Image (tube, rainbow, N blue to C red; front, side):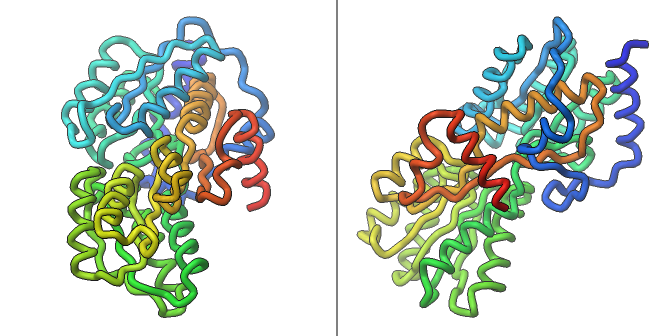
Length: 346
């Protein structure tokens, strides 16, 4: 029996005793910045390893950037990474078909970012039967996932809420544009925002509306337009991703309220950075998808090599505004160093 097969069988046995994963609250976790210090440098991967990566969609820049991270690390480590994705963020069966097809083609590892918490469960179960390690990478959380890589989703909303509390001492009316209903990341981001506003906002803020934008820019534009009509004195919007936030910005501009209404997004896509630099989008909670992709591939290779790692590897995020945008742009090595410094400071 090979070491890889023995490891996969051990992980498969462990899966039977694991409780359903709640990645934000999982105690068995380590921050990405501690990976080398705690577990040593990654050993050279075995020759011929093929990694299948299944993204939610490539329409959204965030998922393209995550794939860029996979391939960047794969090129550096000499590992083949094949990235495929569903046609859009609602194509759950299409995404499942991609994952199942990869299993039939003999991939050694699957990196998956599911559309919902449930749609890739059949593929995960099939992978376990075939002794193929599966790593859940960000966003939706598969309850039976043995290993998860991604940021603390609740903290995303907490950071946005604290910006509003700090920058609006008199309080005000706020609205939330949520992601797809029931998806773990959307639920946690929204809960983190609302709970922090309620607990730390000194009773000065009211969340007047919280509606699903389904990760869709046009729908979010329409939602924001309705909310602004109903609450012309609204102070700000928190959006569960940047595509939706940019739709809200367009609505705010159309209403002539760009100076009055703050808009905070999520993900850190390039158009969000451009909008921040142009003085339109107020902020984004960047979760650094390229770096996340690099970390995810490294963790997957460590697991396949038999290394025992925590169930959750937490990746970085930062609230980026016009005031600090330079800290998180430019040279990748410098940004990585700044994020390590951020982690040490926390």
